[in-house]
Image 1 (tube, rainbow, N blue to C red):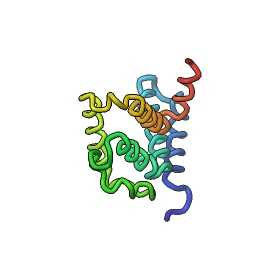
Image 2 (tube, rainbow, N blue to C red; image 1 turned 90 degrees about the horizontal axis):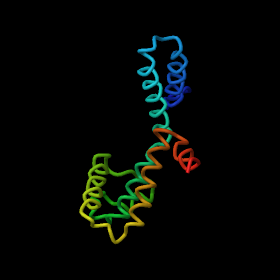
Image 3 (tube, rainbow, N blue to C red; image 1 turned 60 degrees about the vertical axis):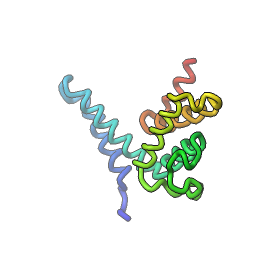
Amino acid sequence: MQDRPDAPELLDAVAAHLSGLVSAVERSQRFGLLVAANACAMVARELRAGERPVIEEALRVSALLGPGAAGLEDPCAHRGLRPPADRAELRAAQGRLAQAIRAGELDDRLDQALSVLRQSVAAKLNVAHPGYARSADDER
């Protein structure tokens, strides 16, 4: 284990430094600088979250497709907070879920599917743009 600052703290510092440089650089370079700062902040949030979001997404996909159809290795193990064998396995299951939705296989459970998909999008937004989901709800 490394001493402080840890990886997320280092990334936060880089993001803050890059953001602070925006007014000092030419206008043509500002967007790239902001993108780099945002990328550092996103990676810091992903590192802080650990494997929990991956596990929770695997559980959501398995809940819709069923563990066998999802193709996720031992989904019951995820309840013990062990992630899927690899993220490629989860991405493949997400692809199967998208195919099932397109094929109308979940039409009889549309409310459940929408709820699960909203949870997945909210989880991604919490990493990519914290607070966005709340601010979008406030505008409604």
